[in-house]
Length: 327
Image (cartoon, rainbow, N blue to C red; front, side):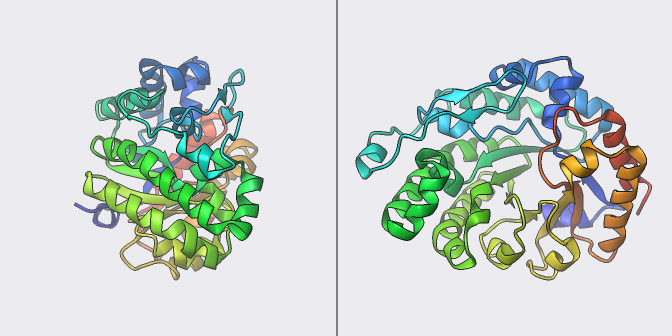
């Protein structure tokens, strides 16, 4: 069954907050430990599954994984989000020196494949995974500011970097897709593109990556952070089965700009609502959004992006309960 049919064929809305980091805190584990050990990571996800039973269980989000597999150094702050420390690619020769990763051996890729393998035993419903988008990985190789400049000054080199990045993530994405139900492509750098640049630089690689994920057994969903309203039509044409929206986007308006058989996910604010409000505020925000999309069947209530680790448990419970009280 396809993702659209699964979402629209039930008797209630589905709820899938992106909350992997919260699971680490609930399990009493350091975030870095979960990102470096499959058993710890699965323990964190089991805490989420047991407490909230989300309709799609997602792992802890890590946007450094694929860059690290290419040899880039990664910094793990104490109980914080890891980041890429260096951006070594500034010439075609630098790019040629990078070796494509073997997903079964490179850095922490095998660990995340093991997590994907083990999630089926703890997930209450569907299992999800994340893979970095080719454009965002290319930006990590060059540095975001340099990347943005070179889109204008050296578009051919940028295209080469994106093609390399696509090849670097495709094997890993396929292995995840063979083990889970949904693979979310994280492409945050794309928000800085114009619609024309998105079509020229992001769309072709995304289309190929979506085909690879779908052909390997999972449903691809595209997530771009920030206000993506100007890009929605192009995101919908990039080959994904679903679009995940950040909190700045009007979901009802977005629904009119995607394809009729695509899924929409989103888009409760992770910080302003889930972290900073109380449970009553969370319920009110969820009720308001559900009322806005009442006539949109192809919608899964989710958070606009990954929840901060300090998000109160009672707020996540309020999120889940609000969905389950409504048809």
